[in-house]
Length: 241
Image (cartoon, rainbow, N blue to C red; front, side, top):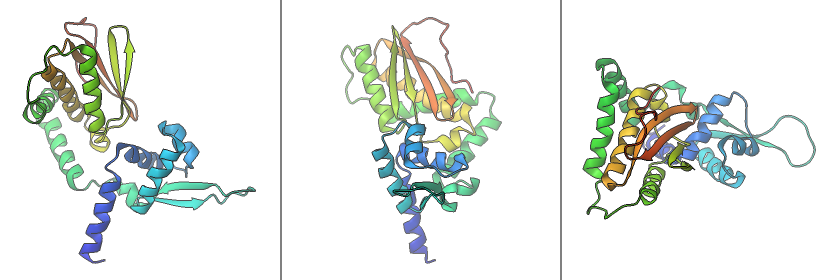
């Protein structure tokens, strides 16, 4: 295949995986072991069936998934099922930026006894460098700060959901845009995310802080804990694998 054609395929695949929901769907098809239909995918992702169909069309067009009729019998309209293609399955070999992230996270994990602290500071440094507001917010309230944080993490592809329980709040992160690397090096990658969260709140100078991040509570769910500044010491204070 000419280099230009291969580059075009890679570009289409990368574009298809730019949305966290499509990454989640592809991972379900990779890991499930059996073909899944739209209804099953919708039930496992929490997405509307029409949204699932939209994402599947893009994945099929990018060559990452395959659609076929269910060979099992039955009357009426044939049931369509989806599987990951060999290209979509990945074969366990990361490419491009994923490979670079894997190399750096793996090195940091094995070369430093304080890898998690260094990774958290890297996340905070990124926010200080690139996401500091042009002007300070005046008397930012805790609810407004939380809304801005949720919007920021939605922009980054985490599909966040805010859950409030009295003065305590949790942000359910339903999709990780770095899932492949984070699942191998949670101490590093999840600590970076914790640093992003802590510094984003610090930039807003609001009376609320991030007190912990629980990675992989389920295979596709992490939970960030928020509390009023100076909250009780019983809350988790760092990402624990």
